[in-house]
Every structure is written in C-alpha cells, then in structure tokens.
Image (tube, rainbow, N blue to C red; front, side, top):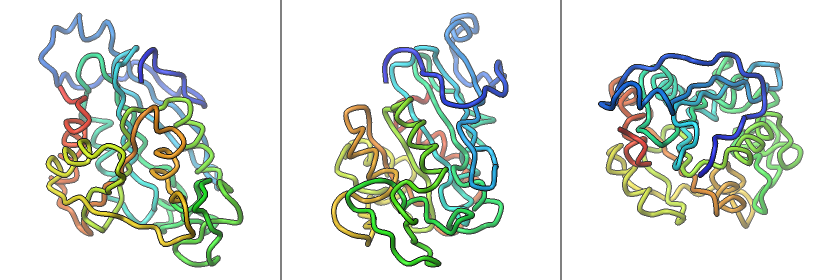
Length: 254
C-alpha cells in the first residue's frame, strides 16, 4: 500500500505510544516519520471493542497486518499479536497493523464462534458461502456477512488495503497455500518452521467464505492474505518470536 496510512474507522484512543528502539537508525530520522496509533475499529455483538494498533511510517511503502485471532478457542495467535504490540517496530518506510482479536466475545467465552454462534471464518460474503448447520462449529450465519465482527473487518481491510495479511489460527500446523503469492508463503514457512498446506473449507463451491478467500478474491490487486496455523500447543518462545518471523517474511522487519 502506498501513500499515507488511511484513518481507520473508529475512535482514536491514544497516540504517541512509545515503542522500544529495535532498529539501529538515528533517532531523529526514525522519529520524524514514525507514528503509533491505537484505534477502535468496531465492536462485537456484545459490545466489546475490536482494537487495531499501528506502528510505522506515516507514508509507508509496504504494510503488513497481523490478525491474531478469529476463533476464540485459539489463543496462541492472540499472544503473538499482543507481544508484537509491546515489542516490535517495523523498518523505516514500512508499516505494521496488529489486531489481537476480531472475536472478543469468543475470546472471553473461549469458544470458536462469536456470541451468536457463528464461525467468523465462514461468514465472509463470497460465492462459496453457505448457511450450514446452526449450532455447529462451522455455522456460516443466517446470511453472508451477517456478523458485526465480519463487517468491521471488511470495512477496515477495504480502507487500509494491506500488502500482506497473516491470519493466525490453530492447530493444523502449516502455512496455507492460496496460490496468490507463493514466494511469500515460502518465506513464511521458512521463518515459522512450518510446511505449506492446503486448508480446504468444506462449504459450498466457489471462493472460500473466509477472510483470506474474500481478500484474495476481491482486493487481490492491493495485496495477499495468508492463513497460518500454529500447532495445538506452541511454546511461549515460539509464539513470541513468530511476530518477527512474520515481519521478516513480509519484509518489514528492520
């Protein structure tokens, strides 16, 4: 994404957050183009905030988004995102968005689905969407993009249009093959010590009703989205170090 970072929908909660000096560039040069933001981009069904954090250049030439969690019973990616918020800083001229969770209700309840029982990674408005069985773990919702959380992320992605999106999940232990950017997939696999795999969504025909399927189908000219699945119980060290591995793969790490 080129040009100025676009203002995300929502309320700016704080600015000027101080990040650790993790890059060996002159402080004055780094600070003149470096900015941080914490933004509420929407709310969940139960009214919990969905929060996005930005670190990086005011006019980045390349932007990475790390989405820590979509399913509330998959906590490791959220921990990666939370670590990134506190500890990482992208290289000069690039930007990093971090969303620890897009499903705060599911995170609070430790459930895969949101508070309405919908699998948010089956709710995206694509040709492959189906309703599915209400009460199941993969219920797609009463209609396409029926959920507030899905619509919040759609609005954010349309506005920001990241060059790279990494959506973190568990426990299938691999990097998803989207066919969109094989080089990026290979870099992720190398950095995270995972194999590239095809993660099929057994719902309907056509484009997968997932975040990655939707982005790669409808916003493909702006960037690529990849699913990364950790194992069932990754170590604390692996989870924390993964943010830098993802940044290196997206070429935004100092």
